[in-house]
Image 1 (tube, rainbow, N blue to C red):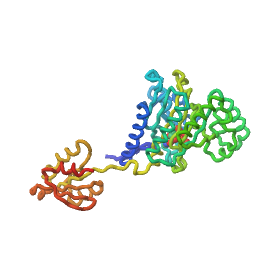
Image 2 (image 1 turned 90 degrees about the vertical axis):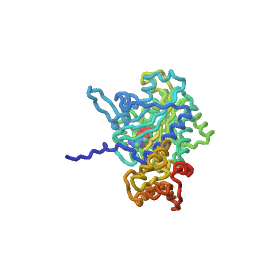
Image 3 (image 1 turned 120 degrees about the horizontal axis):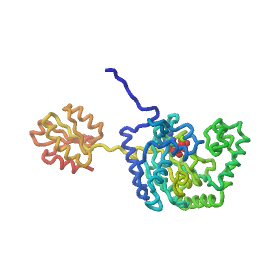
Length: 420
Ligand code: ATP
Ligand code: MG
């Protein structure tokens, strides 16, 4: 037989045990927090018509220009593995008329996203996001409540170094004039910009403010900030939000360079940046997108949302937040008869949760104890032919090495009493 070894597609991040256990603990905390705030889960398609992303995220963005996994299916329809979920949530909101269910709709999702990027630490081609969207509420109170909730999530996970950066991108009333103003500024400095930015000046000049190229950064240091160009409505929205954050004691930094890579944002945009993450320092991001529901064929509906990068989040979390649990005791049979005797006890004890381990392979006492130690159990209950004769198991505390005897007739009961 010719053997071949097949591996994952490059950059597709998979989560293996014991890390998968830690992920589940964190995911449960996310679900509990959001459901407490009235959010309900959406489980969406991973594959969408390409036009959904092209139309919502915007043609002149990194994602649509070069990061999407797009291909033709067997009937020549262009499909794309979702690079983010906001567009899909909006698509679902419209498709299933979710707005009819309640005036304010709060939805969350957890799952994989796909972007063809250069894989590196904190950046993968399949990665995961925890995210949420609120529909139907245009007030800055909603922005504040969502940001406070997100900060609370980080706090629950004992993450200290995530700093909130905030900006307003204006709306269709004030952004066009600002864009023109910025275009002029950028045209004057064309030679100092990277090729991407030069190309984007006419279509998406705001992206130059966000470019990671050091030369571009230098060139835009004294670009006019959008804050000076906001209309009254946008200015009030932003200062209202900042006031609420001040009242709740949530620290933030106003960052006039924060523009985000996607076209659909209006007014508030934000990122949580964590120094500990190195170059890939954004752990969560999002903002308001009051036009997108309508642009994708629905009724005009204001909306606000965010996405957390799950991999980057896990890099910030200490092992104490999601400690690995170990079975409480190892049942150690010596010989077939003892194994047979212990099996029903093992099954009974594990009906609710895994309390005991039991090896089926008749290994030596020494190797079974070694394995018990590795599994991190607190007790080993040793039963061999002698113990069966005497009607007692040997109970060894793996930490203190102390040994006691327990009558076999009440083995299960005794173990239950020992449980912390
Ligand atoms: P970046 O500036 O790092 O490329 P982004 O602005 O493209 O991030 P968003 O589209 O806002 O990211 O996605 C929200 C979050 O998802 C990011 O803050 C980040 O934590 C995470 N994320 C984005 N792209 C990746 C990726 N390729 N691999 C892992 N996590 C990612
Ligand atoms: Mg990106």
